[in-house]
Length: 266
Image (cartoon, rainbow, N blue to C red):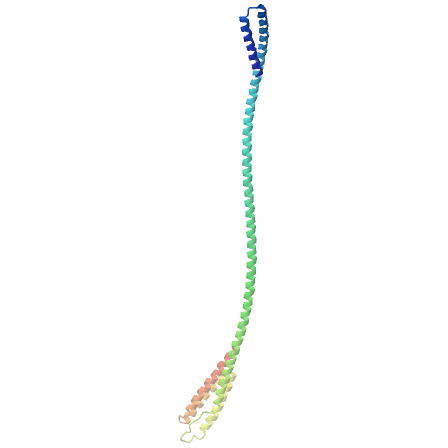
């Protein structure tokens, strides 16, 4: 820029000198003008040289500027690439971090679920054990109750059977004496009294066999008693109905004793 200004100044001087020389008539002045023109030409050459040097510098500077622009563009491109790479790396790192956090969360949830499942299993096992213990206690309680109930029923059955035996024996003893028999109109020559004595023996045999549980001997004794009752009825000419009824009562009482004894055995 300085060279250009200097060149303009020189041209201005040359122009002024030339105009002065053209319009001057003095030789001295002409020489003076010529000298100034020489000087001006020298300065003009120097200015031209400086201008050319400045132009070269300017061109070199322009090339440097273009090079710097290209470098700057490449630098901006590299920066954008770096920013993009960094952004992508940050995104990937964030994704990896989130994935790791999600995996850790799943692991924690899994561990928690396993912990809860284990606690539930232990709790269920404890409840099952308590239920089993309660069931055993209830079974023992029920067994004890059933045992006591069985004992109570057995005792009640035994008492009932014993009562039936005592009641039946009382009935049998009440028939040891032959029921009233109507005397026949004709003499029987003492045969009714003999049958009455046999009645007593037969009833006693029924009592003994029934209380001993000897069913075979009891069957025979009941048959003999029935025969004796029929004989008394015939001998009294039908007046031994009481004997027949009495024999029936004795037989029923004896059978009741046998049944009661069987109940006692059970």
